[in-house]
Image 1 (cartoon, rainbow, N blue to C red):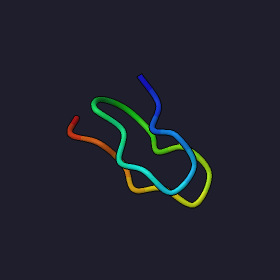
Image 2 (cartoon, rainbow, N blue to C red; image 1 turned 120 degrees about the vertical axis):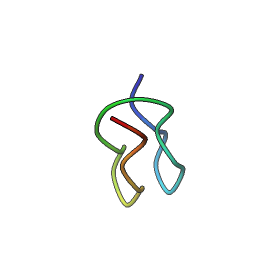
Image 3 (cartoon, one colour; image 1 turned 90 degrees about the vertical axis):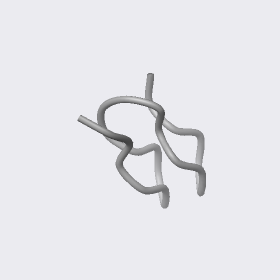
Length: 23
């Protein structure tokens, strides 16, 4: 799932202003 704004995604691309999660 994508990360929330400013948060890290668990898997896949980050949310807005967030960081990408693990592949």
